[in-house]
Image (cartoon, rainbow, N blue to C red; front, side, top):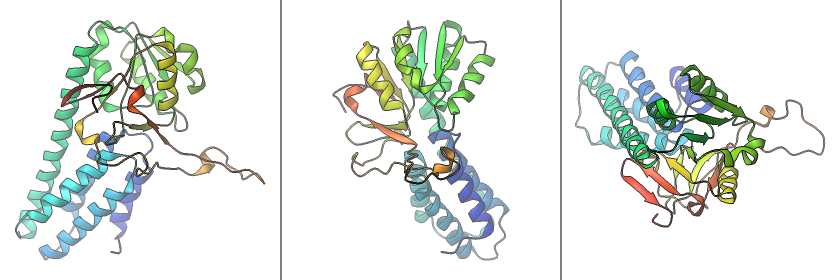
Length: 291
């Protein structure tokens, strides 16, 4: 289908977002669908549903490395497709309600995941994290009174770890910001590493911001437990070989081309389950080897 200007604007917003975590971005996509529904002008219901489903299908494919975007868009499409026909005014009530329901499911799952992680790490006070995650931010907020230090990696390119470090420092949590290259130097100064996930594959492999795999390797070498915390909506039935890792424009690394030089800017990597101490979701705690 040919997208309208408003549809293209929404799609570009989701596609180009380099700051939001996967769950947050999925909720933003749902909010945008609800807003598109509320603000659009249709006289007949079928063109309206065609436009909304068409946008949802494009959003579903917009971020291949972020499972919640795919999963929630798929749920939205399936739920909408099963609905009987309604008038335009009825759809304008039903669709935002559906989007809100899915967003609430995400929030509740995130909170439950944090409940499990807090129970697992009740005694620990020294943590390191990589990139930014709404779930990990909730965990940090909950643990705030007892955290002695939080080490945040810069998480380049994009440097979203800086945003987390600034937020943490504003919460009066003792915060140390380091470059990604220093992960190995500081990994043995914490009691646990906690990261979020953009996707969890069918063999337990975790997809997250590039550098997560290297941090997991450093943690294994230092004997530091490595925990991944995310909601069940991050799970996707794909193997590591099937999963697509998003690659971003190389101008982020090299503004001007250099003859005979090839540049890669892959934003996500794969951390095998064998390097993960436990995967913590709203379904519970899964130890290594139980994936």
